[in-house]
Figure 1 (tube, rainbow, N blue to C red):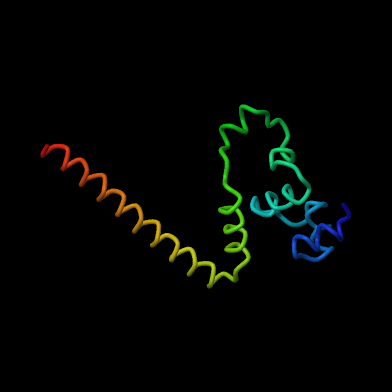
Figure 2: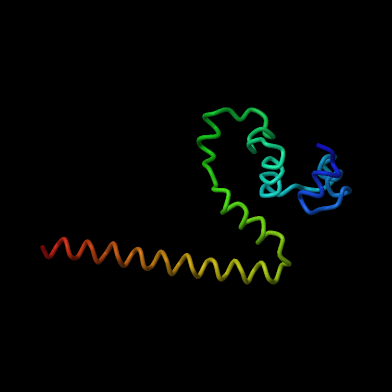
Length: 112
């Protein structure tokens, strides 16, 4: 695949892809994941000395979570911060609900 075609699929300029290739600009892990997907490889393909054991330890991030992370990462700083705060609040509310359910089930088991 040409650098121009990759740039188009990534939504960046050809010059940006060249900077990634030459190491002039840092490449976020989320962007590397996206490039791996476009090229049909697993992200570990880009990392030296990563075998199956290391891959298993790295864990897997689902495609939908990674796409969401990429979208959030591309937001301007202020909007990104707001989205992250909203997501954290939602996760905290979910965890509180799950904790309450677990405690409720535990209490019910003690009463039986």
